[in-house]
Length: 148
Image (cartoon, rainbow, N blue to C red; front, side):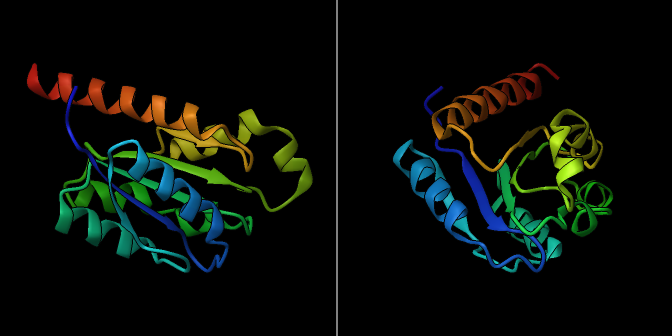
């Protein structure tokens, strides 16, 4: 598909770790995405407002301070209320507040899927894989919207 998708990147909540989203934003741009960078310390409501204003196709969040689950507890509900049910959601980083919780990444991943995320990544991830998965998820979403 030859479409330039719009994606939002940023670090959610009170997290000031912005390097990961800067690198991700650069790779996304290099792969033809239109990127809206929100930077660090971004409140959940800013992601939602920006997605509405820009008609974003995806939101890619990062968090390294271990409190993302707390920051995002009402995120899915807010997205639905804002009419953003078709936005693809990714999150990555240090998403646990304890080593024990992070050791069981599959269980942690399920928590974020319940919060509405389509893909959940650990702190170290192959960005080529992320781009391929994002393109695949967006193409699948676009096809399903056309078939309605």
